[in-house]
Length: 391
Image (cartoon, rainbow, N blue to C red; front, side, top):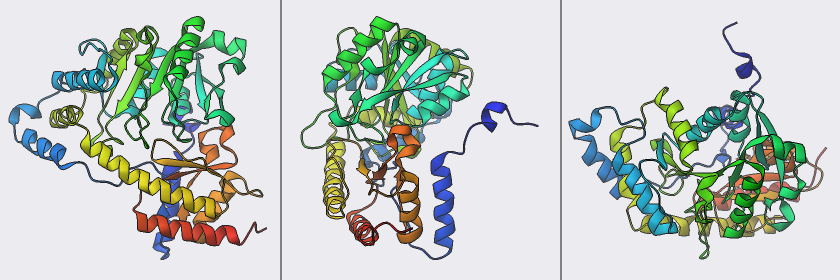
């Protein structure tokens, strides 16, 4: 009697359920290797920790932050965009500090749509887009990504009634779960589509700095006049291995950022100041630690990719993110294959259907363990697939 209908209708977060099952199997003595959640295992760079330790000693930093985040952090975001993307941002109106990009995304939807409004969500895509739309009383409509062409959007396949009804459209590159990467022309097409249909674009760039083999992920704000319709979310969680610090930002369209700021100023007072200042220090760095960590993830990716191929799975080699998106053998659903991997050989992966209907036939594999554990995962998967499909 004390729970709202929208919470009653919300399924338990998939990764919470996986973690509970992992704990049950570990209690029975199974060595479980968790490749389910996208949480980097590498340490936060020392220079960031040192800055946090320095700032946390100052009494002035234990007061409330300003509601839009401290000026130092917002100016550091502007610095990063200018030097990394060549994009000019006004720290006072085009940047907002977030307690991690996940909360920002969920709150933006709440700030921008009314009950019954339509939100276009990529299929496959990050589940929070849909759950946050549900909590805001909105209507989620999947739009297809072209699996045969690198998971780029197929805007011409969106129904006219959905184009007219849509208020927001989400994109995410490098992609979660697909690890897909795009060039700037994809964002140019997106901005054109959004302007033609009066839709705001939300680009989730959580993995923008985790790239391989010379690939540089573009920002949607590099498209001329993209700020007229677009915002971009960024996070230090993946690029600087600061997941538990909960620090991120949103940049771009002033109207959308003002709406989010109005909502957030009524429900939180931004992040702990020393965390913001340490994060600003990270964004002004030469990104050498990011590059070093990228090389580690690349080595893991190469090892996992080759092992999956040898195990008979069909996989595209990614150019970014900390995931591999793999087809599964015939004879299983994604959920069945994932469950069997866990129960039979103690490997947690995420079923593709957790990310939308088009995820059927796939699993998402996180690269969040060291090479020796990746080798063990490959051994176990080879052992499992060599047995064939069991009834």
